[in-house]
Length: 177
Image (tube, rainbow, N blue to C red; front, side, top):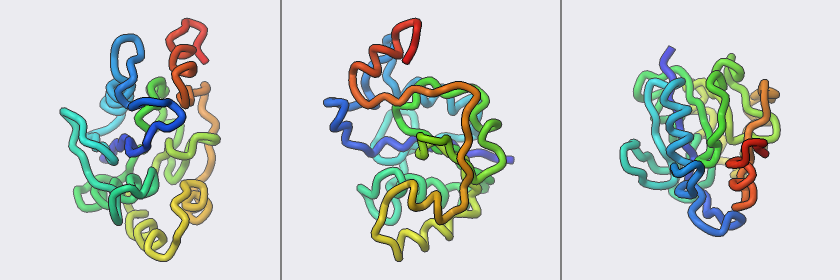
């Protein structure tokens, strides 16, 4: 079973006030924490929505600026064309993922309840999502999730949802968020 990890990093970080992916957590950019978590669970990693040194970047599909769903669509297409069986999707600020998140989400399709950007998707859904995006104006993850039949999963522990600098500060605190 070959798994592709995708970091969805095309957001504008409006609530955060600066580039969230580059924000430091314990002296390291958030995106580096995410990449580290994916590296132990995935055979390869790509990033959607931005360029980042040391990680292959792929453009949203069908066009740039499509948000997390465009990134997921691009990752599923890349996965199906390159021999991957599934895609583990996360956001650039999911810096405290469980080391067994893919196992907790298996079998796909599944997503983390209340954090739908985090999900495990079979690469075979590539055509379905691409077609759905061609006929749908909505670019909301929850709309796709309903269409796909993905199931919500409660993780064994809560993961941080970093929307502002205060959330980041709380995560650095030993008590967490």
